[in-house]
Length: 307
Ligand code: NAP
Image (cartoon, rainbow, N blue to C red; front, side, top):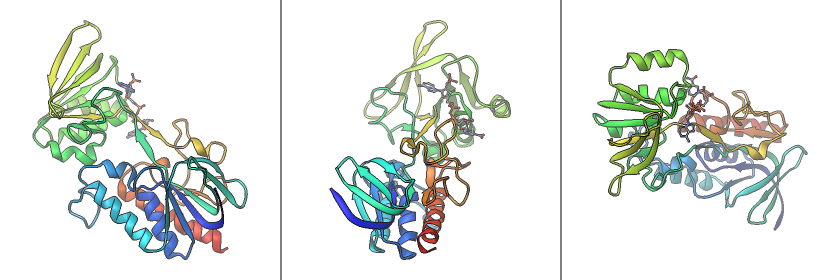
């Protein structure tokens, strides 16, 4: 369905970056449409409890996401729940097509589709997210204070997750599928110096075990062929993230991992196309940094519209 209206800005992605962008865009006087595939929040919506958003001592991710969406909509942003399948941003008026058959036009686009954690791909992994399975130690680590946890992975993220958890948990197993870590040497040295971290090499996680929630891992020692159970209270999967950036090919500069290279001003190489949040290459991916990107991108979009 073709919509004749030309929006000042269309925001793709309804996580903290997208809703923050929508809020700043409407307050700057831009006609604004936000397109979200599922429900408000993105990764935030699946976060059990948020305790590190300034000014809010504790809130569940779903409620914070709803509050962000309500605030943007109350300010005048329109919302569309649909999946964007095509983005043509190189012309002055940008074209956005959706799976639902919408064809939309905009003077600027703020792309805030985020990133998704890679999954181990095991049965129960999705179902037990928030019930023993997590993808973010910064978000969920405190729920495992004094407990025994495992981290899956062997890269920088897994090493950092294990080190973070070692300060909170009694025992941290780092389970890696090979005999050498991919993590940088300084991190490996810190791991070796941390008494309550034990690295289990050459080991595959074969199954998640428990009754209604995770209570143990079924592990396979790949060298000996020995299969055994490891009781744990939580598993943090840190085997990499995948930015959702395929639509930006040839319109924004991507790094080897697919993250968008854009500076703190959130501008891409395409005039009128901005990126915000976890899809952008940045040192810290948190709700607060995503929201900050949204504000910056919307302000830059407003400057482009009003110039
Ligand atoms: P990564 O470097 O790609 O490492 C992923 C790890 O997970 C690897 O050890 C990999 O094993 C393992 N893995 C992948 N798929 C798996 C599977 N299906 N089952 C079991 N294990 C699996 O990812 P990352 O650690 O998230 O880092 C991503 C990028 O961000 C990297 O470039 C990293 O350097 C950077 N980063 C930097 C910092 C820092 O500088 N402080 C912090 C975090 C991230 P193999 O080794 O066998 O492939």
